[in-house]
Length: 195
Image 1 (tube, helix red, strand yellow):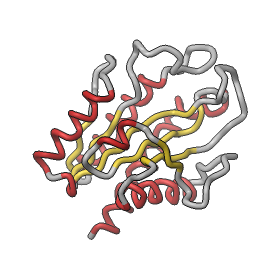
Image 2: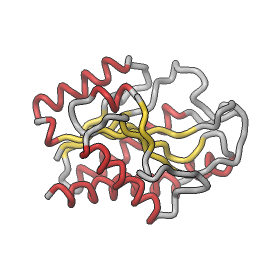
Image 3: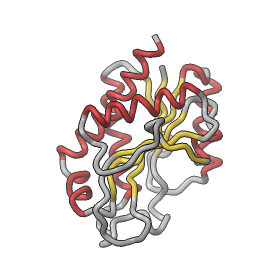
Image 4: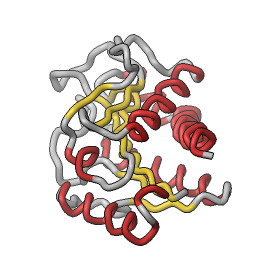
């Protein structure tokens, strides 16, 4: 199995930060992708990151990178996980907490299974917070990267950059290790079901 990790936005995309501007989603996402990749490689799982530097790449170009890997490795042998941090509806501090996952509304059964693996792992790690979830346990949307990749794809929202306690935790060693663990265990759970 080949895992392709997706980074969040770029340094030039405004508004993707905590209300005080100190927490930057693009920076945290890239750090998480590097941590997850390192651990996956140690487990013998092939892994790529869609964009490792701090620039922005159009969604179309990101999907092209993912699909180029899928064409070489075989789409059925790949999964794509785009790693983000959620935010409240307004750019101010809130009390929302928890991890959620999105799939394309007409996504494949494998995408939905991958999303369910993420939700169930987040539940096991007590990371669902104070969110409400649909009966499927994942959210469906028209997100471009989930819609247009050739392989199963999900987008994860890991806690909230608009909640002070969440930001402190996400920036801590414990928080980073836990979110890294969440994604590693999600992937392992998905792979077990595929065998």
